[in-house]
Structures are given as structure tokens and as C-alpha cells.
Length: 228
Image 1 (cartoon, rainbow, N blue to C red):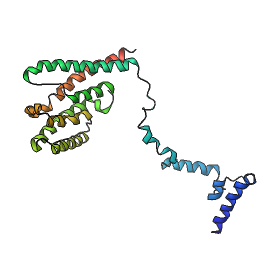
Image 2: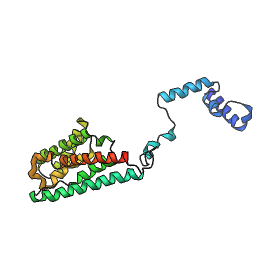
Image 3: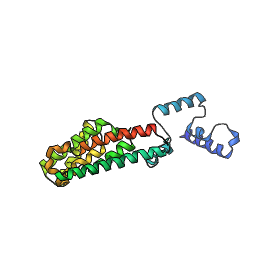
Image 4: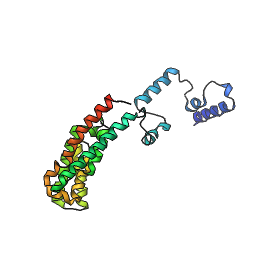
């Protein structure tokens, strides 16, 4: 108790007479008046090893997610034009194929392919754009939708089970491809797809992805060789 009072009195004495001592007030209060520079370096090194950081830095990751990615340069005009042109060409070709398939009561243009186009053309180096991820997830999640509908019928339970099973499937097979998670819901709620049964695993999602992959190769070539 006496030691604490003595340290406290030294701290207040330093505040009133800072020129009378060379020991900083914080060190005087904590009893670190004789800590040398080597000890300070060791303390900083231990803080780095054990991940001890200042409290002002703890909130930065939360706010960083609301900001543009650091170090990313502004996209050039060609980086915007070619992916946009690829998306336009993809939907135009799919629309033309719909006109041909309409005589058989079929369609290949579905909403998830719009999301696939964004992944392939805008973020070609992301994990979701890998061919393995895309085709494994497209086939697996579409089949899950058919199986879930056959088991539970239409309704919220089938949609919930199908989505949960799709997420588990993509994690287990390491084939994360977000657009594929919408395929089971599309089948369960879309009566026009029910007659396809398990063919739905290949058409229209997987078949449309084949076309989008071909267009992606053209887009990547144009981006690499025709910059402006």
C-alpha cells in the first residue's frame, strides 16, 4: 500500500514539476522507471508475436468492408466495355436460342445465368469463376432441387431444405459458385421445369454455362489484346 502511494505521489510530482525528473509519468506510475531501450524492444516484439494491437485499430476491418478494395486501380474503358459487351452478346444469343426452342415449349434463358455472366465477365479470377466450381455446383444444386421437390413437393420447406443442401454440397465439394444456389429454388417454384425431371441438372443451367464459358474466352482475349 505504501509503495502504491509513493508511486502515485511521484506521478503527481512529475505533473507539477516535469523538469525535476526524467522519468515519464506513465513509467513512474507503473514502476517502469528503470526500463531500458532493449526491454522496450522486447515488449514490442512480444506484442507483435501474440497479436497485441492498439484498440484504435480493432474497428478498422469493420469499416474496410464498406470501402472500395485498397490498392485497386480505376478500371480502364476497355475493362468496362469488353465485359459489358460479353454480357450483351450472351443474353442476345440465349434469347435467339429461346426463339428456336419456343416451338418445343422450352427456354434456356433463366435468371441465374445473368448472375453467372457477372461472375465470369466481371470477376474472371474469382473462385466462383473456376470451371470446376461452376459446373460441379450447377449440376449438383440443380439435381438437389429436383430431389427436394420430389420429396417435399412445393412450398417453403422444400425451398429451405434445397438451399441448405446446396450450400452443404458446395462446401463439401469445394465448388462454391453462388449463382448455382438459385437453381433449386427456380425448379421448385417453376412449374414449366417440372417435366424435365433430372434432365434439369444439365438443362438449362449447365448448357447455358457452356455458352457463357465460350464467350468468356473471347472477352478475356479482347481485354488482353485490345486495350483503350
